[in-house]
Image 1 (spheres, rainbow, N blue to C red):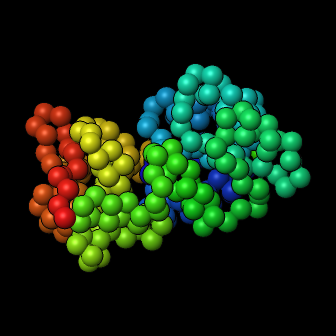
Image 2: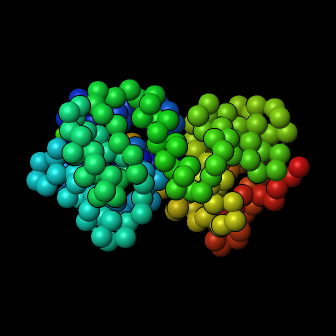
Length: 222
Ligand code: CA
């Protein structure tokens, strides 16, 4: 998943970003709503982790703005322990879930998976496409029942394709899901290399090339 963190406590921001990257996600992190707002307009985030106490306009202000502008991205708010009213205001303001600080990265990861699962209309924690199975919690892909050894980026690519099984995704859209702004620009052929590896490790038909448009998940094989 590509995730956006908005947290002005920098040690916490760093810990959240590092922990979520460790879980295989592409993560951008900002300390104020203005920067986060610009980021949200510039990349296809799957979910936002939003602190409420922020400099220059609190989280609730931004959340309400995003919802007023019809931004449907799932938002999880981080709140202080005693702020029951804040949590209620956050949920009523359009948040999908909340966590009370201090939080654990494992629970945050699980809640983000649950939130995006609901947003994607999925009921099951394990995703299936014919003989292909993907378990985002365990970060395991199985083909015909056998676990396939995939890198974090290969898993992220598989997840991006499986989250829109009927759609053709452009190379730019897929790259945006795989790479955040923290590292170096990916190599120009990075996506082709990941696709090549998926086909070799899973099945040659698992990714379909749609000439001139991009890639799509292959036909379902039982
Ligand atoms: Ca804060």
